[in-house]
Length: 97
Image 1 (spheres, helix red, strand yellow):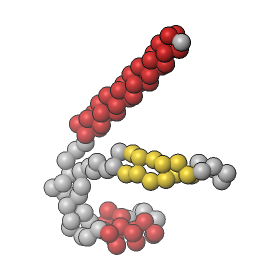
Image 2 (cartoon, helix red, strand yellow; image 1 turned 45 degrees about the horizontal axis):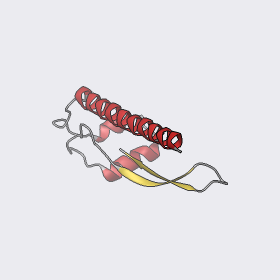
Image 3 (tube, rainbow, N blue to C red; image 1 turned 135 degrees about the vertical axis):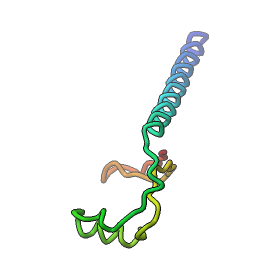
Image 4 (cartoon, rainbow, N blue to C red; image 1 turned 180 degrees about the vertical axis):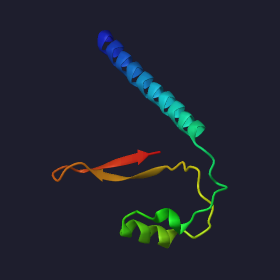
């Protein structure tokens, strides 16, 4: 019985260490990405930037963006939802950042 408890404890510790390692690596990657980003917030959007894009894409951007609005340097977004990985599979809860 004691060996089973020790085994379960070791598995739990390995699992937690893996989660912590993943969390640390993710945060480092996020910091690295933000450090590499260029501040373009002083630049202004122009409809001329849409030239060459497919017509549906141009229509969408013309609908949601205004001529002359400041450009966005970066966004940090958190989301959640459901994802279906196959026709015969159930929906799976997902979260992301």
